[in-house]
Image (tube, rainbow, N blue to C red):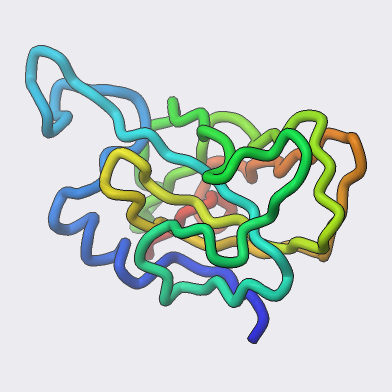
Length: 156
């Protein structure tokens, strides 16, 4: 089965239960009103054959890429843009691209799993793109515009 893109089903209920705190730290952060925190979000790459989808509930290494200068678990996401709304749509986009520096990933990959490593590696979303390989290069996933319809996460 091929990888497929979308907001993970488990994430939809987890946000209602308050598991995820994305974006800049604010006084409404759940940990403390005096020392607010933001969850650490990561982005891991997966092989074309991995079968990642919205059914994922947590990050695991099954089907994850491996190669030179790639660390299992992927890269830490720059998470400084607070979630907001645009009209009636809730939106969130990381504040910087996902950059995998000087990697060699010789087996084809086409999926990234974004997950919350602070909250027991809970899955947020899977995103797919055209099949890639990289030889001693930098692979960058550029983030979309932080706006309704184009944000990485859109909840309408």
